[in-house]
Image (cartoon, rainbow, N blue to C red; front, side, top):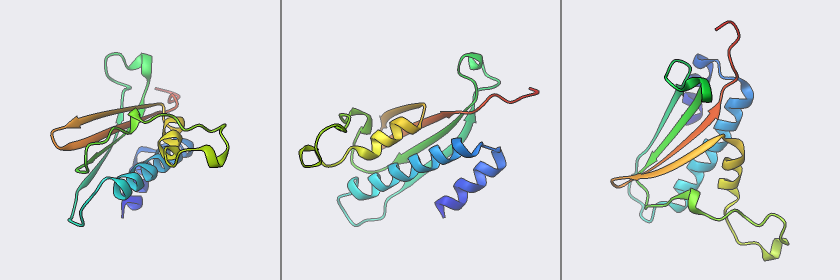
Length: 136
């Protein structure tokens, strides 16, 4: 169901395939981490995903241009994924710590990431630049 909504937004907004692929893969990594590590009980939980296109008509937009913004809000335990150390990719496999590759991938796919704790919610915002539109 999530992928259907993701594809629908992408089509409506005419997002370039490379931008949408990066955002979609990043979203998948984030959601897997939330579901796998964020909850300590079997109760029902809520994850809210918001997609938007920002910039292009706002003050200061000339400096940043238009961006696809994906905001993920969850009610999992407090966790700032941006505070995790980068994985040691050059270390031998047996010397590496487990985890950290997903957020490393997201950091490399997206142009900017921010995290904040709002009340009892984690909010991760991911942004990816959109190419300039010709004829605008």
